[in-house]
Length: 135
Image (cartoon, rainbow, N blue to C red; front, top):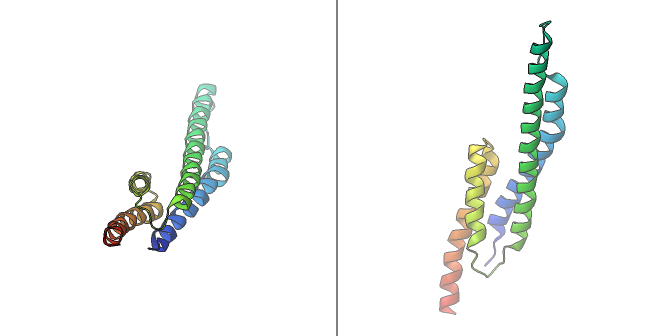
C-alpha cells in the first residue's frame, strides 16, 4: 500500500521548516541585530541595557531558527524511512508531536501538514494490518 499522500504532507512540512529556519536565522535575526531599538537616551546604562535586550532577542531568534532547521532535517530523514508495506508506530506519533510543537510555536503550516501526515499514516497502518492478516 502506497504511502504517497502522507509523504507529500510530510515533505511540505519539512521543506517549510527548513525554509523557515533559514529565514529566521539569516534574515530575521540579522534584521533584529541591525535594527535594534532606537536608543534616544544619553545615559550609558540605558544604552547598555537596550543592547543587552537586543542581544537576547537575537540569540533567541537564532536558536529558534536552528530548532526549525534541525527539526526539518530530522523529519526529512524520518519521511525517507517510512516503508510502504510495514506498520510504522513511532514515526507517525513523532509527526503528531512535531505538529503540536509547531502549533505552539505558531508555525501553522507545519502543524497542519505534520498532524495530517501522522493521522494518515496511523490510518494506513490499520489497513496494512488488515491486508497482512488476510494474506
